[in-house]
Length: 129
Image (cartoon, rainbow, N blue to C red; front, side, top):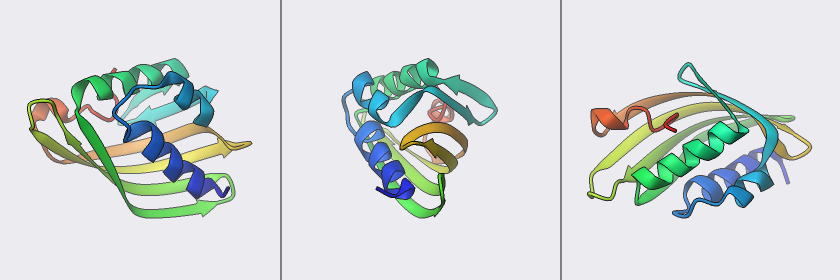
């Protein structure tokens, strides 16, 4: 499987599914995973906490890939994340990310997020724990 396909699959299976599944995260993300998002740093455990927090704050998450490019083990994405919260309010966030894979596992992500719509409290959805 190509690196870009692996990233798309991870986003769809982990982020877009309503259930929090740490075992599924471990199928895609290295235990040595490091992420930098909007000036904040997360390791693997921090990313697991982040995904749990996103699942708790939303009733659905949808990702639409706007653009994707791959160069060896590096994948760049511009994707749009649309969320619906339990109170039926919505938020849309643009995400620009650079993923690095090693032996098929995601080991690093550098990410910038830009809220397009939603409440002020949703601005941290990209890094919330």
